[in-house]
Image 1: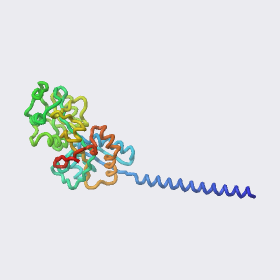
Image 2 (image 1 turned 120 degrees about the vertical axis):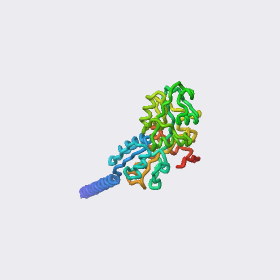
Image 3 (image 1 turned 45 degrees about the vertical axis):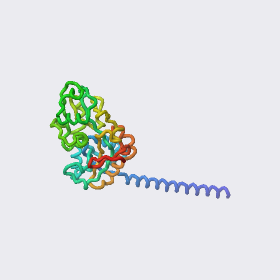
Image 4 (image 1 turned 90 degrees about the vertical axis):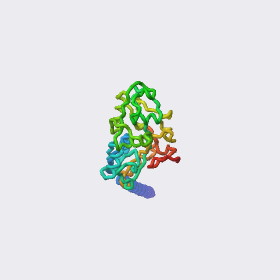
Length: 299
């Protein structure tokens, strides 16, 4: 009789355990479903700065790998296009190398600024020019057309071929703000993307233009200015003057999926690896800050 009683107790205990496991599994499944239902989903369309484009494209690719219900489209077109398109509501995010306040026709108060990185920019020349360093005055005179041959700045006897960026380019606005001192650049051919400019300078003898650091490759020569090299370290303390923030503007506060991606852009995962790997500078590394008027102060 004792044995029967003992066996009954074991059976009851086992049944209780199985019921408990069933409840636990049910709870886990419910939790999984809840987690799945809170996952972000939706579409984000991003247009604008070609200087920022490579970083956003790669970050979007990585983000979508972990968020399969999100579709992110990234296109160039220039900072002016990005700002006007986001202001009109045609796109979700407008990428820009300049503050919205610096772009004509943009109502900056309608937009929300999300700074995601810093980009350095540098004058670049075809390697055959034989020049590696110029003064700021010489650089200005090259772009105003006062200097027309590389021999006049220590290079080869070769005519200078100017390649500029179109109006509305944030890269152009940044370069002119730091270099031109209010003077107007000589009329020349214009190209609307960093990638196209990089290829043209590499392939055109005597060519000169300017590029974001992330586009400067071994087949072109970046120029130092007054002996100061275009490096990340020199940007962080403003020894190198040609730099800007990379902005991602939204019209008003971003929706859930857009906010999630913007948070990802400023996360350690992007800022401590992708930003550096692709030739940008994390805002957290900057020892100075710049406002919309171009005034630079220590942090």
